[in-house]
Image (tube, rainbow, N blue to C red; front, top):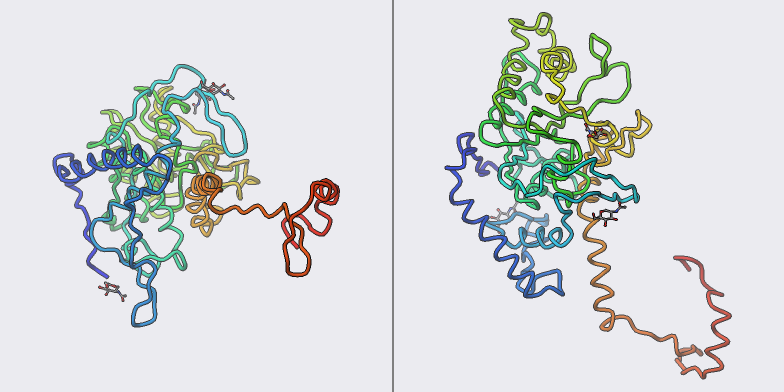
Length: 406
Ligand SMILES: *[C@@H]1O[C@H](CO)[C@@H](O)[C@H](O)[C@H]1NC(C)=O
Ligand SMILES: *[C@@H]1O[C@H](CO)[C@@H](O)[C@H](O)[C@H]1NC(C)=O
Ligand SMILES: *[C@@H]1O[C@H](CO)[C@@H](O)[C@H](O)[C@H]1NC(C)=O
């Protein structure tokens, strides 16, 4: 269970990735070819099912481990989302409830940002236990919630061609584990123009909605340092000055000299060389979030510095709607119940898989929908109806049936 190869931090730089770039460049070409050649069918005809999934080995247990490069899975993912990707510069977006979200002005991002964006997971824990993401095997049954979150980040990056990294962070000797996000994000902001850091209980609800569209919608400007969502209106979420904390579980940050300065001050906050009283947040809740809320945001307070995202759009989940309306329209944060994460991952696949399956079902209807309505049943026999009998039948429709049941 220890043969997982981790990418070292130095491989964050583009130079270390030529091999992957080449590979990644080939994938869309292959996909495009397959997609255009077999447009009518969603599953490419050269798609080979993974022959060992699921299998029972001699010990009687499931053995779902995959070997080597699995390009076919990349193809499946891209084929599922590509036809319905939302344009990055669309004037509006309609969500699953039919609510329409409109840009307030001309979109700033009109092109895809691709590898300039880094989708970032950071953790200092080993996460190698059963059901955890760094274990060599992972099954749907028994999957631990955070694995679902991180896999959804990976998938989101794959769908849109963003970069994805999981950084195995070193620990601070004297601070709570979540503090490691600060220096790790700072480091990532040296190699990428935009980073999207998500706690592992955070996920995008619409994987087909690109980050660029959200940057347009949330007014990311050239001056913006970071965007974070506000926390629910509850007593524990207020700082010394009586303002609500910004949640550091979801951060979009933009590379700049000033952003580097801000992260440096944030990481050094507990030293108290600049911010008196910050040391207590080393171990006390809400840790780095409290440091940001009590000090950093008041120091970086130019109008464009920090964009505050509405709780209803970028925090919480529908199950938390009674906590200040934070229902996670675009970005879900499952602090309300981490057990909802696997369902969140399933939603982000099934939202797209189901309509496509249904479409295929009807597209191929001639092959499998059999119309026996022109017959009547007598004993065990089918007898073709006369025209008069057909007329009479119409008025009796539904007599011995009920909706979706018998
Ligand atoms: C699963 O199958 C692979 C390949 O057949 C094998 O190398 C591996 O040891 C198996 N794992 C378990 C847990 O049986
Ligand atoms: C959304 O934008 C499209 C294209 O700009 C437009 O045709 C459509 O009417 C808009 N829909 C709504 C509900 O505003
Ligand atoms: C973006 O700008 C529009 C128009 O000024 C405003 O209504 C909206 O609240 C802004 N959004 C954010 C997240 O700042």
